[in-house]
Amino acid sequence: MLQLKFRFFKYLLSAGLVLAVVSCDEDSQDLGDFTGNEITYQLFAGSGYNNEGYITFKERKDKSIQAEVTLSNTQAGGIHPLHLHREPIAADGDLVALLNPVDGKTGKSLTIFNVLGDETAFTYTDLLNFNGSIKVHLDDGLNKDEVLSGGNVGINKMSDTNVVSCSDFSTDL
Image 1 (cartoon, one colour):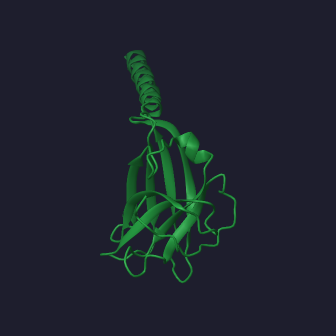
Image 2 (cartoon, rainbow, N blue to C red):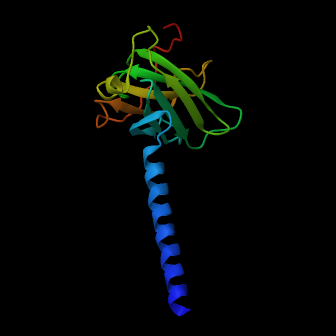
Image 3 (cartoon, rainbow, N blue to C red):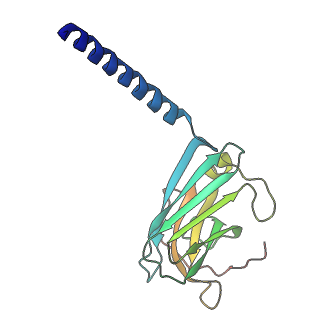
């Protein structure tokens, strides 16, 4: 009887181990809409603000890019325009893409895109080689030049991180 209990326990343990391995293997391979390529960049507080965070770009299987922003210390009711600019954050580079604004209540934004404002195709590989930066603005009204937070992306990831205002702010791309 003891030997029968031991065999049952041995089979039960083996079955559990097989299920655990299969479950882990399935989870690691199921990427859904994504390729598994992603990169995260830090967003630094703008002058006079304490809003920091990060932006993560994920490559989707359809070759579009999903941009996810998380920003700290935002206020409910605030809507903060989010832009991709040419040049490092310390420069006053041209605005090339409007991303969905950061919601002040959650501090989050999610955008899926595959073209710039001028309809030029833009892929994850293009992003990695891009001479650019991300800027989160206070608003799109009187304070549109105020940058709450920003950071370098692409080839500028290690460049100067001093955030400057945005005097070329225009939504006419």
